[in-house]
Length: 255
Image (cartoon, rainbow, N blue to C red; front, side, top):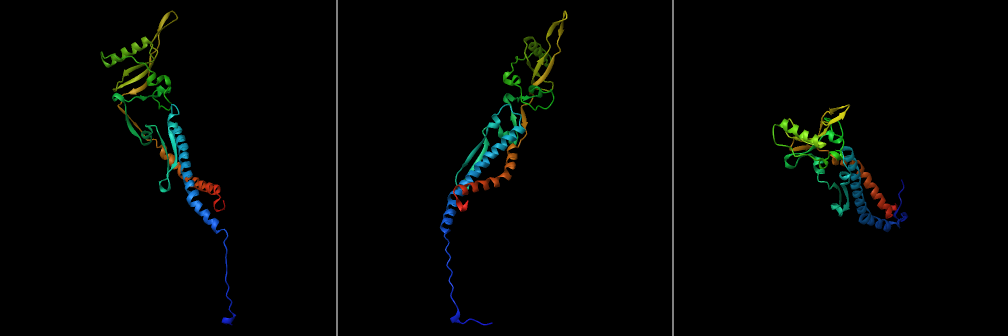
């Protein structure tokens, strides 16, 4: 193979001019200082409000709601802070939501906890209550006579029922056989005139409220835990959309 001598060698110099380098540097600096931080703040805020939406759905599916107070108690807070300290949050201002989430033993006032029965919601006595307590059967709507302290338990209950029937009361406070007390709805028992004689209407009692226990165990509903699990697969897409939106907004890196 022939070789070139020193005199025949040529020196070649390449010169490359990158005209877009300065713009790229500015875009990168803008992305670092502006676009990415705003994107992260936007993504965290979106996650908080999405968690709020999911959590409210869990509450509607899990709880027997009298009104929208519990659902509206769920609030989302926009992201704040900078860098690693940046955060958003979601929570409830209803004090009982902590007990509902984790479970707790709730004690009643004066040593007795009122537990509404199925009849208070207009359902069959003895069944599991799945509806809210009817307005007429709420504790604040019921008027009761002061129970007598004379005689045996059976006699006291009979006297309370007789007085309630006589005065046309719709509820009566009775002592339960196994201990404690309960509020019962009362129907019938009155004498009515018909076909030239009086008839005694059959007396019916249905328990509305049970006051036989001093506390009741509230099992954990874990609605927030299920919310966070449902949110998890949405986090990355939310972040990606937030970053792309900021890059397009600032025309960074050709977007």
